[in-house]
Image 1 (cartoon, helix red, strand yellow):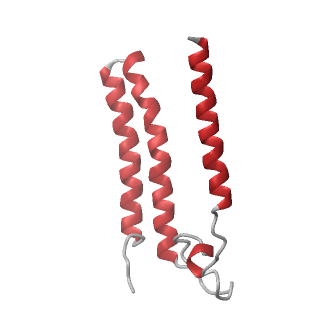
Image 2 (cartoon, rainbow, N blue to C red):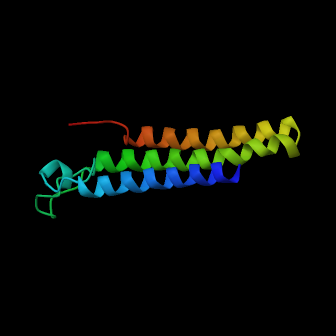
Length: 117
């Protein structure tokens, strides 16, 4: 049984090393504009650095980050079900969602979600 697991481990290691070596050997080293440019950065990196940044892109990125961080803040609320009663859980969850909705309404009211050209 030990020999079989050792043999399996050895085969996995050899296959992994072989794939790694083949990847290093066959790596294409050509460079073009699309490969060297950042993905969806909001500006063209090949132009002058003094060009204005897209404000709409920045605001949408900030809103995305806020809602992305909000997901990580919602996960511990699940554990409140075990240590508290349902009324405290619902009040905490509702208060959190209310704060997020008020922030979204504020962004909408300020015109951050409008794409005017």
